[in-house]
Length: 267
Ligand code: PGA
Image (cartoon, rainbow, N blue to C red; front, side):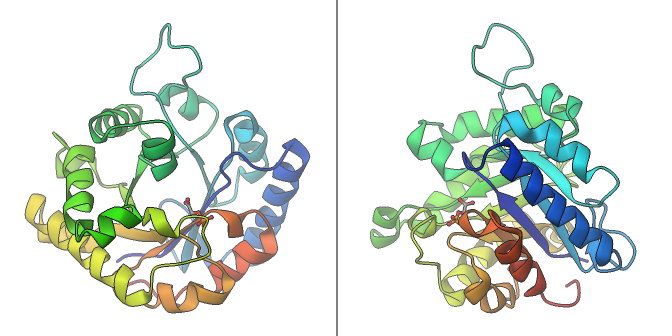
C-alpha cells in the first residue's frame, strides 16, 4: 500500500519566527485531523503522510513543535562523511540527533548550483541510510536534456548512481522524487502525462533493479511548481504517490490545500 506523501521543502526561506509559526499551524492541522494524517509509519487510518524540510538552523525548533505529531522532519542536505574536519557540512548523525527522520539527497539545486555529482549523491544516500535516516532521492532532467530526448537516460543514470550498491532490504523507507529541473520554481509544472511517463519509468526500473514487490511499494513523489491549483490532477496520476513542494509549502494555507487534494485512499 502506498500512502501518499506531501513534503514541504522550505529551501533557504523563512526566519525563525516564521518557521515556528508555520510548524505550529501544521501541528494544529495534524491535531484536528489525526485520523487522516499519517506519520512516517503510515499506520492506522492514515490518508496522507506529511513531512517538512526546514533550513538547518530551524530544524530543532520545528522538530520540537512537531514532536508527538505524525509530521516528519527532514534535512535538506547531508554530508557523505561521518564526522570530522569538513567545514560547513552537516553529518547524518547530527540530523538524527536533532530529531530528523528523513533527508533530501540529490535535490537539483544541490546538483546544479553546487556541482553535486551523481556519485556524491549516492554516497550521501549511503551515509543517510547508515545513520538510520529515510532518504528522499531527487532525480530529474534539465530543459536542455528533455529537449535533446535525454530525459529517460538522465533519470535512470541518477537512479543507478544514487542507489549504487544498495540492497532492497535497507531501502524500505526510501522515497523518490521526480523533479524536472525546468519545472522547479518556474510556475511551469510537468503535465500529468509527462509526470506519469517518468514515474512509470522509475517504477519499472525499480522492479528490474530490485523486486516487483519493492517497486510496487515504493512511493514516487512529483516535484516542480506543485500548487493548490494543479495538485489534484497531478496527484490523481496512477504512479504519482505524492508531492515535494517548494514555494507553495511556505504558507500553511497553500500547503494544506495540496494535502487536501490528495486522493482519499492508498494505492
Ligand atoms: P517548487 O520547488 O515547488 O518551488 O517548484 C520544488 C522543489 O524544488 O522541491
